[in-house]
Length: 217
Length: 238
Image (cartoon, rainbow over all chains, first blue to last red; front, side, top):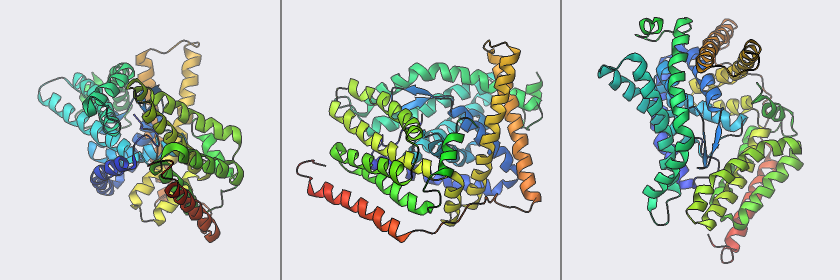
């Protein structure tokens, strides 16, 4: 979902950076308040870097890959995800030449805000509706991953609207192109996330409130 | 380790290594802005030429390494413009492609000449929140460890499965193991730094002073490109 350098007009880059800024400021204040969890956050960011580096080229001004937002959201919470995704995206631009510096604000918005908040809200809602732990996290992971790509499609559609159909037609075109690679990736990521969280809790590497009993099952 | 090490090595070993990150940000960032602002034809070509010349002649980056990092970006970009071509806007697709290629060459120049620790130290001097810089240093150190762990896990799986593909369950368990070990490593790195009395994970990096001559030349190049674009705007409209 990393939008390439030069693919968005400067005004759009600035607008997405402004939209991400308040979330980022909130994430920094959250980070200041949870300095004792710094190692956990760093490991989550390192893991996010690894997952998002496993990229497949996509014919939509971007790339397809597991987003890792569900893992990051469960481990670190959605509020700090903008800061973690900023670090990950910056390192990917500088170390793997993937993504971009001018498109950083737009990419933070999709990977660090749209994806994590969708995942978190859906996860909580599914649990409240009585859906089991495993289906709830699977559903939230898959939809969260797709929400990240829907956000990227919208960003691309706003930047490159269709000459006849406008933004809506462009959004449908970009989303359809992403769907080819991202639907299977999201489904696999959902199963994968549950197994990873289970292995992680069983290894005693981390405590997730209310997950110990579930993980032992 | 395998993914980011080569680019990182080059960033540590080029002729611009001792140059201030501020100088490089002004030069590369200015070109990046021009690539996004000016009409694609012919100014994207001019920006691409300027950044390529700076990378290969001034910073003396190895041509093969430069091409190896630029080519995938241009490849992604070429795939990316296909939906624009399907929509029938050839001119728009060509503009996006040219702008993207020029911007990618500017980003490659920045990434290949500026090591991450230099950039983080510069960010700290620019009053970026300390907690963000500390976390970035920790993540930077961890990425190498995680990739090394991943490589060991991959090798272990390959030997156990005799080259066959792992099932989803095996892959997920290995990934969970990788994350657990990553957390363990992060905890040790943080504790080690705290015991040595290091807060903020400082790294040793030469503090290069900004060069007035370099900055003047960089700004002169930007200004001349901008002036040329304004002068020729009747021939190459904005």
